Length: 240
Image (cartoon, rainbow, N blue to C red; front, side, top):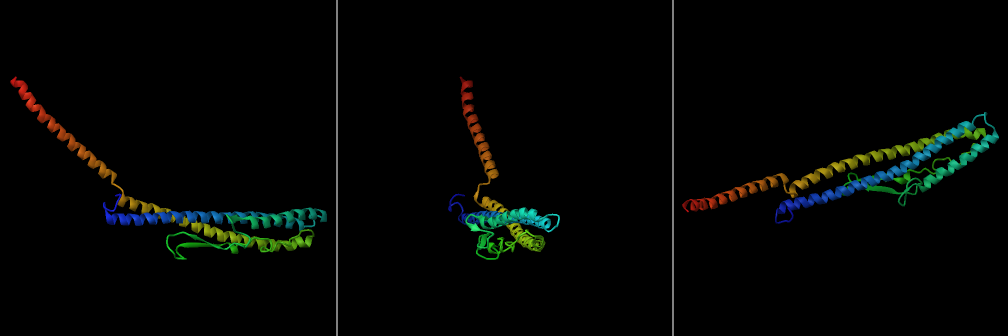
């Protein structure tokens, strides 16, 4: 079927299906792009979590009298560098031009269906809630230069780690939802494509059988004509 004259109703249904398929294909790309954005944010938080683990290790070391003030001074130099790295990650983690971890991002919506329903057709990711800067984690004043400061820092670091873990859990839930959505869209695309193919395309098996049947009939007709032409010629030969 290539034109309305072949099957007007069938063509109308086929065009509607084709439009739906294209919409679902784009929605699937949107879901996959959304997964990429969430993965970038989660990756940044993963690195910050590793730094917090290292900071806690240094805090435990500095909280003990087995190290002296000179050693704590060296430890504190690393602490300063680690804090700077946390801030750098928070400010530089972005998807395109969209900041994801410094609190300046907006609520980003992923259009994952072909209609205009906020609940059914969109998944939201609020980047403004994933703040992982030094100030938002309350670790900007961490210092292990004296034993008491290191001891007090343990609880602060634990709270920061809990905060980051909460962010990562939320991102993981969004990512799993997007994965499920993408897979569901893939099934829908496959089913709609099969339906459209049944309406629009020629049945190859039926067409092949028809061609074979016509060839057999043609060959049979040629054989009959050949025999008919040969019979008078044979009779004339006998008479001569």
